[in-house]
Length: 160
Image (cartoon, rainbow, N blue to C red; front, side, top):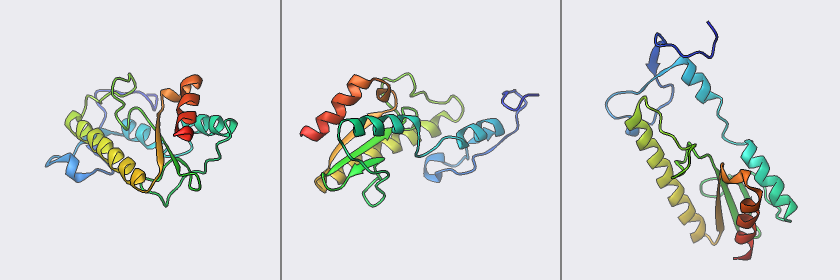
């Protein structure tokens, strides 16, 4: 049987890492296939991030990555100019109205709570950065593919 095939007889086991406050009294279950697939998701160095970095460089924006000393560790930042750029994955950050922002059928209540928690954290971090005097732009994974829109967003944050 191929490694990537999902079958109904897949062994279901608890998540490796779970935010217990989101899981409730029952730990969510997953299969080896799903666990392996989710484990391949990268936090940084993604293709949308590379596209945004190249576009920003062409526009004359010199942004460093990642800015770990700032709240929320923006994906790209220029501390001197007070710019912070977040590149959000549509799935993980629940991009409303986007076809990529699906909710898994299995463990649905857990995933809904997780995505809402991610959005709440994102709002809090943007507020903290703005309080520190940073201009913040959030670029969604799906928006990074539209070069005109991406350019407008990056130029908009520099002119404000």
